[in-house]
Amino acid sequence: MRVAIIFLACIVLGENPVSERLSVGTVISETVRASVKRGGVQKHVPGVIIKFESQTQRYNSFAMSNTEAFSMAVLPPDRYYVAAFDQNRYPLALDKEQARCFVLKEGETIEVGVALAASPPK
Image (cartoon, rainbow, N blue to C red; front, side, top):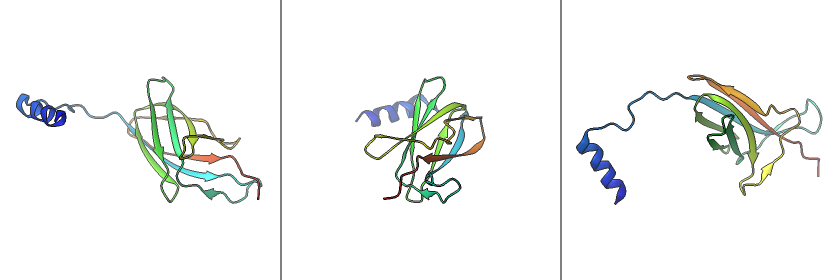
């Protein structure tokens, strides 16, 4: 019921709640498991929750890697820190060589790889 009332109010008042151009950039991520051997083959890891924490810490944004281990997030320009979590919301260790932060500028599209720490062979 509330949604209908708000929608009706917008029509009656003639106001557009989104009247400004968005100031955003796009982050495309690929989630992989690092190889135990340096230079070895990395394996795609689907279903990883990726947390993008803004440097200003005014907000956090999240994405989840799809079945192909890719995700996309549209974020405001800022410097972001990256963290990874499993589907039960537990933190996942990142590879020691994984960059932990990146800068996103307005209008740009960047690729951010998310490499999880290597698992020893079973």
